[in-house]
Image (cartoon, rainbow, N blue to C red; front, side):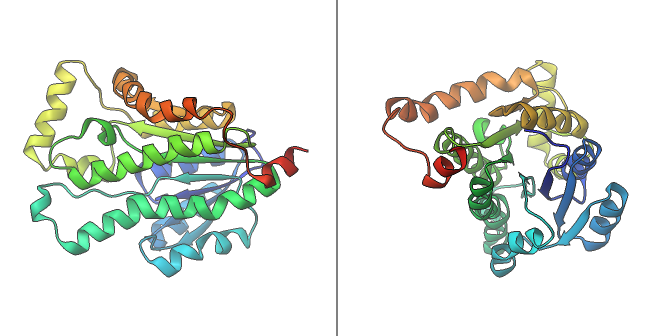
Length: 271
């Protein structure tokens, strides 16, 4: 899919990975629509990349349900990048009810709901791409991240299923699975937990993983959208875990080959 001239909606855009994605898509010629809670930082970034800011609390149900209409009042969304997420470090038994609900809403419900809102328009226009920024935490289940890991497992599982549902349409879906990312709030928070920090350090010493940077993710995501790739896995040395997890995910669709049909709107678009 051509990025130049496309309109891209990026959530969690005010810092870290989202901020770098915003700059990368803008540099590639896209019109970027940026979503995050922090209005000041978001507006500043939007001015810097020539995009538009849409401050929004993705955990607020009413606001979330009206977000795509608000963004598309300024033009249709061709590429949706579900990047916003947060984590709570520590034992699940110490988590408050409010924190649990917040994480489920932000990490799982928000990307699924935004995708639900965006897909009908993409299918009707005959072009579009969804990028879901997930994590290897959804596969390897690191300590002290029970709920975060579960939400990322949801996002990865949902992405794979959508890839098969949409395989006969012009819409692409890319699942992005990443390890620890430098210069991000999630890394700073994760390093406050001794057991989690020690686990990452041990993985690096054993060369099972490595620290990655936001710009690596951006470059890989841009290539994936252009080439309609199903997966981005960084660092690559963790890829075998993802490939193994995909076997049972994909098996039912192989068995069901020829038994499903694309949406009627996609048939009309291709015709």
